[in-house]
Every structure is written in structure tokens, then in C-alpha cells.
Length: 298
Image (cartoon, rainbow, N blue to C red; front, side):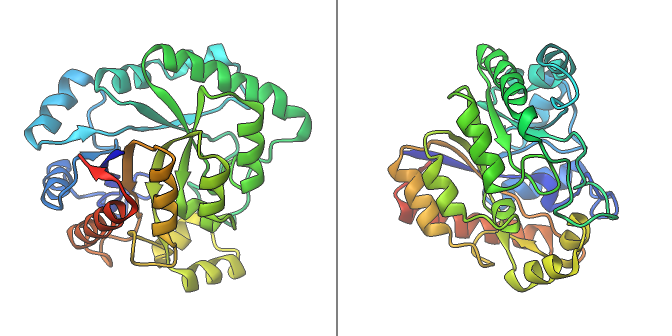
């Protein structure tokens, strides 16, 4: 099984909080991404959104585009409207050769604000689930026809956050709907990343490798801290620097034939966590653990 190691540019610049690295130039982010050893990067707010503009920039740095976040609103609009809304973004993913697109349901989401606790969110009611799942599947099938898999991102502060939410979505949809396994968001939501990986091993098409500092996570949960305030306080870090037990998760993925990207995603305050230092640490730790789990690195 072959994987590539990528990173999310949130290490350098946080799109939800411009005060965290907002002044860092894109060139710095990309140069340091390559210097740290990564083969690719996910999309960030400072990236051009046209293939003909973005590709030469990434080529100059020897980087691939891994994927890019898309904010869906399928709880309030139908699949046809969503497909129309995501047209330009899907064109970019397909044009850049991305195998997957990060897809998160953001209707009523709270992860971008600092007023509500991290767990507050729009809940999908029992009666809403069947139609919601049909809409997600229809969008996924449209994407798959373009050669891009839907990688559904369970995320704190969004309608699909908990293990129960993930289980329900996977049960009501077919293989066209892929799962993005995020070890950090699973841990924050009280789920076991290994249990999720085992239960949905056949659906995982993308992996975000995010570690958590357990004492800070426990404090954030006890205080009802907002998601962004928890980030500022340092709840997340790179693989191998926190409490997530990555080796068994990676071993399970390798044994079940996962191939694709393993993405370091560790939003921190760059004034406190030097981006190149942490990016390099994350690459070294994740590369070592992936090899030990049985993966070949491309």
C-alpha cells in the first residue's frame, strides 16, 4: 500500500481566524511545506482558484494539490442546487488531479465562531436523515462521474460531528460517499479514532492526521470553550506530539488496503508553534509511523 504525506496550510495561516498567520505569504507556506518534506498541500484561502494559475505555482515548488475544503449546505438546499454551487470548486479539484474533495456539511455550523461551545451545532433530526443521505449520495455520484471522490469530513461544530452521526451517514449511503477520517476531530467529539477506522474501513478515502493535547482538550470540554478558542489555546498539534495513538490506526488502514494521502492538519497559533518546526516534526513522525505500519511512501 502506497501513501503520500501532505499537509494543510492551516499550519501557517488559519482561514477562520486571519489573526493567526494572516500576514504569512503563500510563497512562505509553500516553500516551507516542501522544505519540511511534504509531497502535497491542501487548499488554503490564499491559493488561486483557477487551475491555470494554481498549477504553475505548485509545480514550481514541486507540490501536488491534495484536496480542498468545500462547505456544503445540503440541509437547506437540494442536490441540484448544491451541485451548481460547487461547480467552480469541483472544476478546480478535477483540473488539479485531486482524487478526493473534502466535503463538510456547514448548515448551522458553529466552528467558525467564538461565542458557542465547541459541541454546539445544528443537529440532524431523525426525520431529516433519509432525505439528507439521498442528497449527499446524489452529489457524491455527480462528483464520482468527474473522477473525484467525496470525502465527508466529520467536524466539530457541524451537523455531522459524533460517532453516531458518522455511523448514521455511512449506514444510509453507499460506497460513492467516502469518509474522511480525522483523528483530532474524532477525539474532540469523544469518539475513538481506531474504532471509527475499524467500523468504516471500507469507506475511508482520506485521512487527516491531527493530534490532541489531552489536558487542553479536557479543559476545553469542561469549560465549554468554543472551537476556535480551543485552537488558540493549543488543543491540537502534529502527529506524535499528543495523546492520539496513531500506530494502530495506521496499521489497520494499511492492512485494509488504504492508499491515498495522509495529511498533517494541526491548526495552532503560529506565534506560539513555529510552523516550519511543527511541520517538520509532523512529517518525520507521520512518515516513520506510516512505514512501521506497513505503508510504502511515494
